[in-house]
Amino acid sequence: MGAPSGRGQWSSQLGFVLAAAGSAIGLGNIWRFPYVAGESGGGAFVLVYLICVVLIALPVMLLEISLGRATQRNPVGAFQAVRPGTAWRALGYLALLTGLGILSYYAVIAGKVVAYCVSYAGGMITGSAELYQGTSASTLLYFTLFLVLTILVVAGGVQRGIERWAKVLMPLLLITMFGVIVRGLMLPGALDGVRWFLMPEFAKIDGRVVLSAMAQAFFSLSLGMGAMLTYGSYLSKKDDVLRCGAWVVVFDTGIAILAGLMIFPAVFALSHDPAAGPALIFQVLPGVFAEMAGGGAVAIFFFFLLSVAALTSTVSLLEVVTAYFVDERGWPRAKAVWAVGGATFVVGIPSALDMAGIDPFTAVAVVGQTGFLSIMDFLWGNLSLAFGSFMLCLFGIFVWGLDRASDEIGSTSSVFHRISAVWRFFVRWVCPVSIAVILATLVGL
Ligand code: TRP
Image (tube, rainbow, N blue to C red; front, top):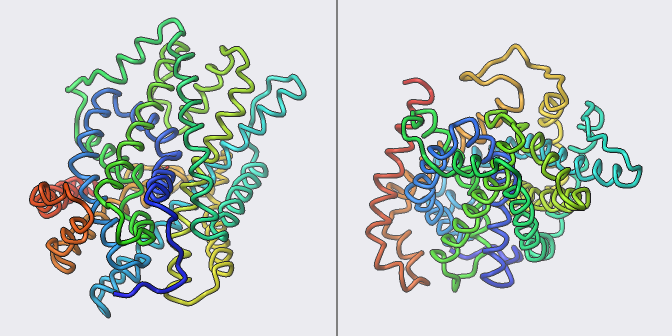
């Protein structure tokens, strides 16, 4: 299968790991993971999450990256390249829709992070401690701003646009988080939070906990909608898929755990409710910053870096859809990026209004979820990713063939042949069966 020319490639394997880690690490780790863990009982959730990451997400990750590298295409083109003219390409289209769906609300929350950064900066200049209160106009404005930033980066192409950002700023985020963790741990009562976050109470594990843990694993690792497939397609045939995938999982999971250690000690020390939901980090972190010497500056820096982490994630969401129009439809990159970005803007407006407290769809409830943004997150960020990962396993088993997938991964990995049989067993049985069971429970079958 010849790769279409002029697609661009990572400058090195490290470039891929950092960009894929950049896609994976984002609001999912620092905003979503703590609030879902908070709602699902702390340590018990964390334990189930780690199990899901290793047993379900990692095997799917290797399959997704290797399919991308083997075909050197976007999600629609990849299914098409392996089995032309079949209904499998619908799975590719679903991936594109999912990317657009997630991007539409993700950019709203990312906009809020930028707004906090600006608000702290403004507070330092004027000396006032008034924190950001989102009106519908400002929420829409920051959402638009964030989308435009994403569009500009993606328009720059793979290496210039994406890789350069990830290399410099991700390590800085890590360092800042350590600083905030240390300060949080020094607060009186902080250790209760550590205990709550790390000690599993097994009685708390139920179907809902397992479901949110699995969905969080897919979301956090950017799996199930072709992002890793597309990024894998920019890997060269010399790169080690196993090692790349494993590093991305390690980085991503590490940052999620650090985010928990940043939030929960402060939640307990400052007497917040761990189950406060999506607003959790926005309620808790300002309290920690207020306790820190030079907290205002740290806050600006932290929210700035979190915006960048979110940007490397939104970039991957937009990149997937863009790659389709560029590769399959022959659109110029700029046209594709602005068209997709524009559509995302329209779809995202109700989420932005919801975020600002004016929900246009209050009367609607989907499987127990209310609020437009939460419903979008549930449909695209939970359901569709799990379904996409399930279908990807079926595609690997019945169409592409796990032997061929193993060869693709094994061709550059000396270690893989030792675990190849285990991996095939997981992709053939463990992953699809557990995803199916959890999805069935979810829709109430
Ligand atoms: N993984 C990112 C996060 O944790 C979000 C994200 C980016 C994503 N690209 C994705 C989620 C593709 C699912 C699919 O913030």
